[in-house]
Image (cartoon, rainbow, N blue to C red; front, side, top):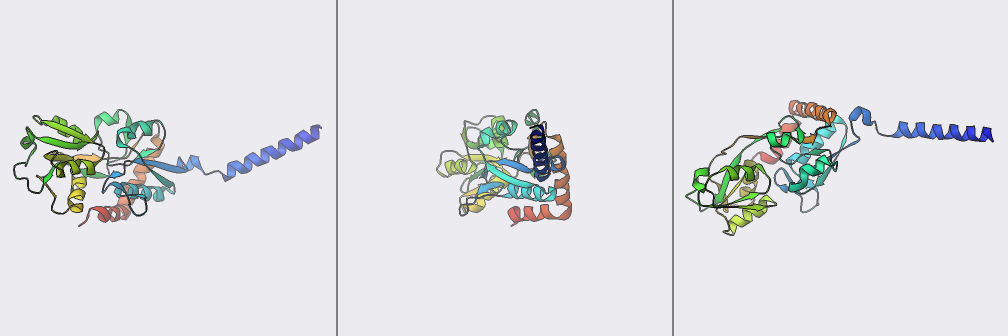
Length: 253
């Protein structure tokens, strides 16, 4: 009987050893998979391909290039912007790659990677608009923003705006302007450029960016090892030309 228990114990130990050998090396990579959360309504940074249903854009491609550099698989999840940081903190995903501006307020909750792109807020208007050129021209006007974005925050800093209408997606904000519900949209330069490009003759920029901002990848405060690896990979793809390839794919004329 004791011999039988001994043999059983040996078999159990061997099975455990085999399982440990076959498991992904999480200690080396920090994770077998990097789960990425993004709000896929922010073209060209992230959006849903209507033909394939896949989340595509600058940010997903950047994260996939980072994953390739690290030898780690990347999974992209489409999540609502207004809950994107709570979702990260609660562990639903490991990284936010969603055109997120690095701010001091957000730094209280998450850690940011090195900046990966410069962005600025602009005022977009209908193509026939002739009186709006600067933030000062928004006095008494109705303005649309995407909720909880830096465009939303910057619009609230502009004195004299009559109404700020908040929308879940940037296309909805532009549609409100097209329908005459607002006079302008305050939003990131690249996103405004994408809407102008997608709707020829409908919109234009009122002027140059009135802020300078930097986007970063957001991680939980506890994931310092993964943050270091992502920063190294980001530097590497900038050095080897992969970053420029992705950038030109979405932002070159």
